[in-house]
Length: 250
Ligand code: 13P
Image 1 (cartoon, rainbow, N blue to C red):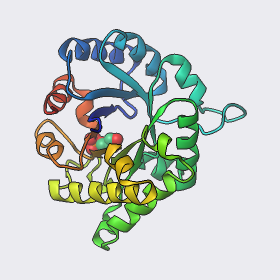
Image 2 (cartoon, rainbow, N blue to C red):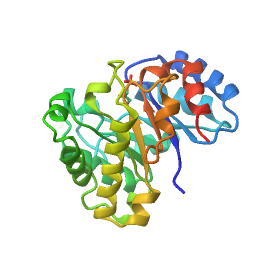
Image 3 (cartoon, rainbow, N blue to C red):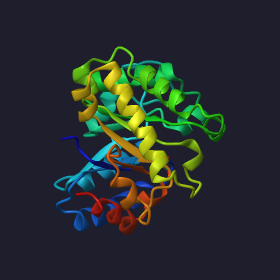
C-alpha cells in the first residue's frame, strides 16, 4: 500500500533559531506516527532542521532546487548541495514558484528528473486557478500538468515521486476544496498516472492535497480514497496544529 505523507511547507517563514525550537518540540510530540512526517524549510534553515530532526521520525525537505548540477546560477541551490546536507525531499513546481518565479512545466520536469537522479524525493505540485475551475477545465489542466511533469521519468523513478494537488484558489485563502472536489481531482491524477505507467504504479504513488488544510478539516480530507496525505502551509507553522493533522493518519 502507498505511504501517507504529511509534509509542512514553511514557505518564507522562520529563522534557523525558530526552526530549531519548532523541530525540537515537534520531535518530542511525534514519536510513532502512522504516516511519514516531512518538514520542508527555507534553504538557510535546512542545516538547523536536519540537526534538530536527527534521531527523530521527522524527514527534511527543501522548497526548491535548480535543475543544473553547478555553475553560474546566482542565488540557486543544487540537488547535490541538498543531498550533502541530509535533505531527503524537495518540493518542485509549487504554484507560488510558477506564479512569481516563472517556473514552467518544462523546468518542473527538468527539476524532477535531476532530483530523482540525485536520490531526492520530489513532491511535485499541480493545481488549477479559480478561472480554470470556473471554466470547467480543471481535470484536463491538472492531467496535463501531471503528464508534463513526469515526461521521460521511468516507472521505477515515478514510484519515488509524490504528487501534491494544490488548487491555487485554496492556497492561503482559508477556502479549502470540498472533500468531493479534492477527491475528484486526486482521482484524475491517479487515472493519469495509470495511463502514463500502469495501474499498479498509479496505486503505489502518494497523492497529497494542499490548500488551507488545517487541524479542523484535515480529518475528512485524509479519509478519502485517493488523498494520501497533505502539503500544509500555514498550519505547519504551529506545532500543535501540525501534530493534530499527523494524528488523523492511521
Ligand atoms: P496553506 O496551507 O497555507 O493554504 O498553503 C498550502 C500550500 O501552498 C502548501 O504548499
